[in-house]
Figure (cartoon, rainbow, N blue to C red):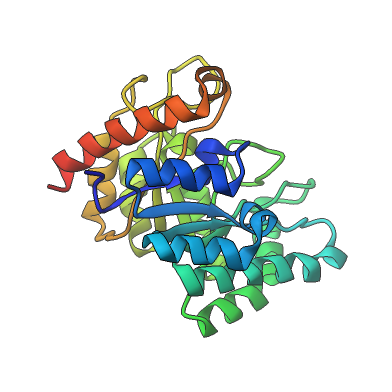
Length: 262
């Protein structure tokens, strides 16, 4: 049986359609899933949400678009997309999130202030719908002007939103467990993956060298009560095949959660 607090992100099978994701989740007995708004809309949003509800699958995250911080004229259209993700989360559950946006030569402090202005109407709308939104700091400079969890926590606090605490992005960070503890209630969702130092991308839990159980335990010590979401992407996953890699990830992650969350 799949652990009640285990979630599988649709990023694990990112080339697939929502219908293909759903068929795999059915086989795996998944009760929580990370969703991608673009996939839901390509399938037909109303039909996708109905299919999830029929199966009792709730959302843990809803991936949406990020802001172009150098182009304020585009913010209104981005806000519309983010607000649609907020509506989805209000209906099916989950935290809508996006990456902070690429840098453009301005300082981190300046960009953090810009992001806070860009996202402010979405924060207000999310609060009105009883939803919390978040950013995901990532190692990809083309997606994020802040590349550490510690930096992401600071940027998120300035914007009044949460932070996705993703082991796949922060495993190399100095003092990681202290950083996670410092996040406290700012943690929106915990995501896990494994990695092999010196090689690109992520790995199926147990295939690499990361102490995933210790990472999850530290997050739990902050009072985090949400799902633990698998998010595996990259060349190693592509080479194995998304079906096989996702199935093995669920099996391995389930065993981890049974140890740390019996």
